[in-house]
Length: 351
Image 1 (cartoon, one colour):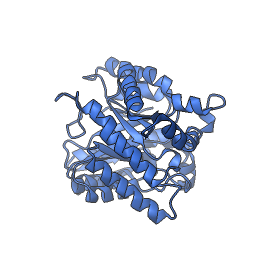
Image 2: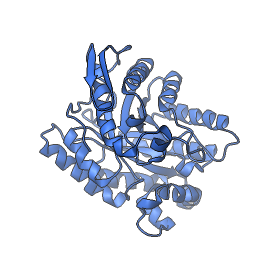
Image 3: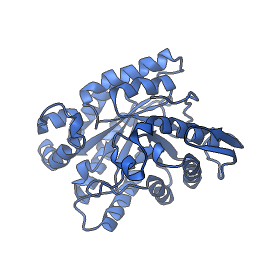
Image 4: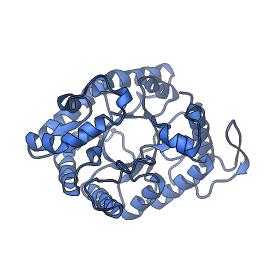
């Protein structure tokens, strides 16, 4: 299994935004030292009480310069909000700086706020996403490319620099709603699933729908599925649940419109996060691996952006040193790695 962390670059417990950036980079550097596979960087705009990661490619470049081994993912780059040729250039540059460590996680976001601020109708997000991803892949792979589309048109574009990874950096697509899972499966892309839009009890059925659509479309293999979920690990269950409480409840109510009735903390622990000792966290991850068939997990390590730096570091150390090795010990040489080539579809995007 692949083990990663997801970062929003904010802790409400810091005295300044500058301190939040410094602590976030320290956490990522520790994650590399402790053997983590990948760090994922958010893209969230105009939400100063939650996230400072509004420019994920800039952050990814800074991470690439600070690290040597860990893979660097975007979770997710919101394609409709940027120009696809500029995104192709910047991602290829990061792939060069990192020595081929970029994993391009993409989506169109379930939050219309950013679209409103950028003056882009959210109703266009699906078509803009599809066209943008098509252009980025063409720019990455074709010596000279031209395009005539609904939103962008250009002639004879040559990408400089080229990505290190060939034919291009791995792509994963985020699922935000249940019907998106099957759409991504039909397209033949690896799946990123987060716990904001649906409870964990829905995950096995959602991933099964993704893989069924994958098979029906005739793609080889079974389709890779990765889970992004809040994780907090402490030496005792009591400490873990007490320290994670406020952050998990805040996380679970980011999308009040998607909540299924009143949310208790016990329900949040069951459906929105993985909280406990190294033993109980490992058992829960193993259950999700076995019931949903996930290929990797990305821990949101500062749940609700309310944990202190010390709390994040203690939890991160246990996650890397006391949970992850239990799964790595049984890994085989055939298991997927972000440093291997990941084939993906060239089919047009439509979901």
